Image 1 (tube, rainbow, N blue to C red):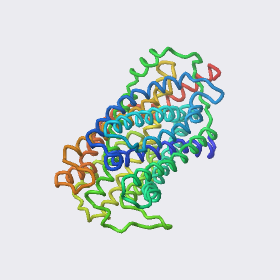
Image 2: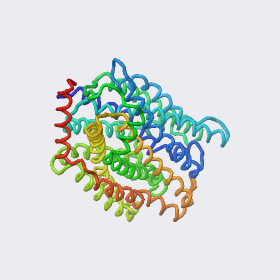
Image 3: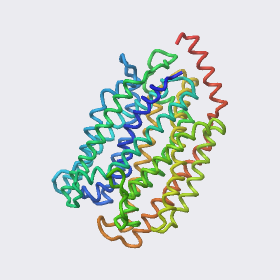
Image 4: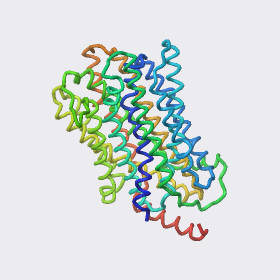
Length: 463
């Protein structure tokens, strides 16, 4: 039985990852277009190019992690080694150099690529840690729940405080230089928190599950086993589609409130002397609702199964997203209510995905005798990156297609397009995700059989 302290420590890791992940998803696009000063289409192309490379980089990290041997284990050392670089490069990503347009675009490519690579280098081992902390599928469900609950708590904190931090460090000035400095210093605060959380995760977790085979398979055998792992392919497709759904909604939110709702016309909400804008509250409320979905995922999936829980959550999210298009900018109550409902659905699927990836590692070990945990879990990160790449690239390109102009009054066509980013376009992702997950074969009954067989083999091998 894993102690509460270790479950919390494991949650710290995704709390750190998610603080930056949500900043990238919700604010990086508008930072590049409205603060950094790049065209929307150029940003969309940059996201696609850099994230395709980064998605390919994830399996490389997984392979390296599987072959790591240290006194701390295979995966935990990366939390120790990369906690500080993760924060430093994150700050550089949100820094605006006083350069010309071409040099700034090159700077954006370089810093963003480095950020995504260090994100992979620390997040793939962190994700893989789930597969070696416990062999029990139900224990993994609990760990996944803690992971996602802390992830959304981190996202909630980051999204709620980020714009107030920007306004604080910029002195409330709208002048470009002050705004740029405000964004950078706000990220410094988040970066320090992330580094501390990663170090806490390293200190409080342990690796327990040992592979039945002690010798390491050649890489080509690991890849061959992975490519023949049908449940893995299904989860990869479902994960990509789910991230397309999330990335489009998150990336367009600030545009939606800045240009359609026109949040500047509303009085900001003050709490403990801190003023919060509508877009920040909307995103933070979504993260709080995600936590509700995470908490509900384990008991619901234990009753009706992981696959059925995932499918129904995405079906409901599809219907709600389509309805969202017809809300007027004055329908703030409905906008926030539907954000809560959609976010509960979205929050419930990700702990299920992480738990199912751990099941895929068990399935692979049973079929092949080889346990490539890092390589399998790298696919989860890869699906995140690739789905995010598609979602944000589409957002940038369609903003340009709809005639978006930064810091200007938008045309009716641009406004209609911005509304679609929170309705019809993410609904495409949910529909695709439902189709993929309906094919997933590792039911709860099947996993009980797999777990029992693996335990028998480990006992026989003295592991």
